[in-house]
Image 1 (spheres, rainbow, N blue to C red):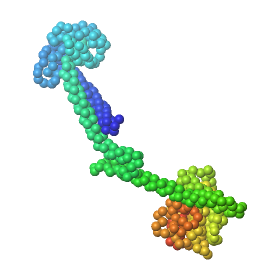
Image 2: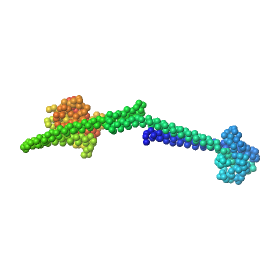
Image 3: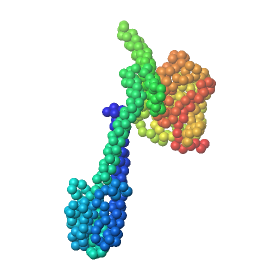
Length: 467
């Protein structure tokens, strides 16, 4: 069901229920009020008749036999009166009863025990009479009963007229709310339908589509359009990054694969002695090792980005983790460098030790690779700025720094400078390090691109440093 139809039905149903409740209460209150007012007038007129009958010695009823056409509503009605003895027999009746007043038994009244005032309704000659029965002392017949009644046709006509007015108002209100709901639904769905159209275009691959809510659209529709555009922009960026990643990965894999294939083809081109075959196999092994290292880096980057890991978090001593990373980095370094470490011994964090060690090792590898001969790489710790129980690991080197054109992309996979392209590595170290930091609830950022260059890892500590 479309939004406009659903909204129109909801508004119409709600309005109908509210009006039905309000009109029902009003109708019942009006009807009971009319009847109560009618009964009060009947009772007052009955007591007046009792007084007049007693003053006249009980010889006759003074009730007018026809409508007078003036005075109160009751005075304009034909009235019916009858007097009964204590045993229930008829004493006197008005001519309007035509000699056939109702028996007290038919009114479910026991003349011997009936006290006070009773309100009764009974049919008479095609109409319904409403009346009151009161006890009084007739001069000749003590404990007599007086019945005074009048047609309730006008009461029913008034309530019928009110009911018709209410039904008309209910129908008109329901039709109005249907039209209003339809109008509001059209107005609301117009903006939503335009957003849905953009969504369908994007789902078909048209990433250039953008939402443009019309002028006068609701704030919610405009905000939804802005959020949708932001999502499309982010999706476009992610797809572009994925394509760049796939292209760069294919390019990085092609170089060692081409070298490996060339070396194997050259080895098979003509017969060789053992030393020549050994040299060819050694070169092929180096290319294979490059492929293995690149594959491991790609797998590590994918696992860090998705949070997938084979080990559970544990309590990791930060000083021990840093020491492991330094040893692993220096063991791989082609040239000797001095790494200075200043880390509190009692600082701990929760995480996966192997991943955290790899993160820091990648940063130290990067610093050692760029640090000039005779300079130190410094690994230090400091409290995080504004972070509760947080700390920052700083890896600093005195290398040439980060070129201006690479600062915003330094953590993207396969991003590296012209000098680094001539060296080993595919430019995945910093990307892996940052994904590991993010996976542990922290972050990695470049604090200072100029010498001395500082990369900073922000993490949450289990215990704050005391030394």
